[in-house]
Image (cartoon, rainbow, N blue to C red; front, top):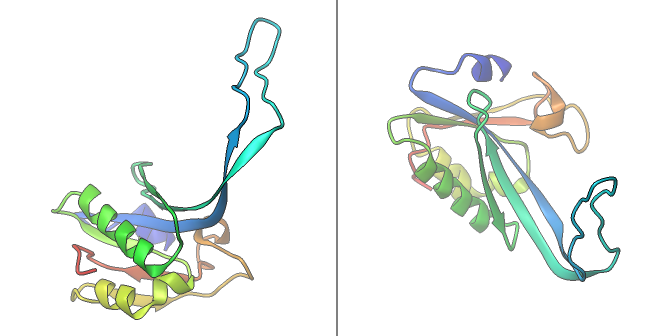
Amino acid sequence: MVGLSLDPPERAVVLFVDEKSRIQALNRLQPILPMMPATPERRSNDYVRRGTTSLFAALDIASGKVIGSLRQHHRATEFKKFLVQIDTEVPADLAVHLILDNYATHKTPEIVAGCSATPASKSTPLRRRGRGSTWSSAGSASSPRTRSSALRTRV
């Protein structure tokens, strides 16, 4: 996986995809008081809950670009929409290689079929370092799962 990110195939982009579910959406009751000379920015402790949201993100290490999306739910349907968003934001002449963790949303039949629809796609399980490991914390050979795909959307 490290080799793929450091030396990607020609005419390809390697994206590390992860998600964070159940992010609390909070609004402060009072406006934030701005910084002034010798006074730091101040916020009130009061807030209103606005439910939860899920963040989907894809990081291109080579360029540092992040493709992100906030969704109301965290299901395969929303993940599929995020894959379509990736497909629209990456230039059409580039193959897309996705590095995914082992989350159940990534392994639904609909998502697997969509990523496997091209001859260049493959799915290779890698060792998992420990419970709760993700690609961002797992290191080189320990990432839970890699799915490499010329995505050009079959999803």
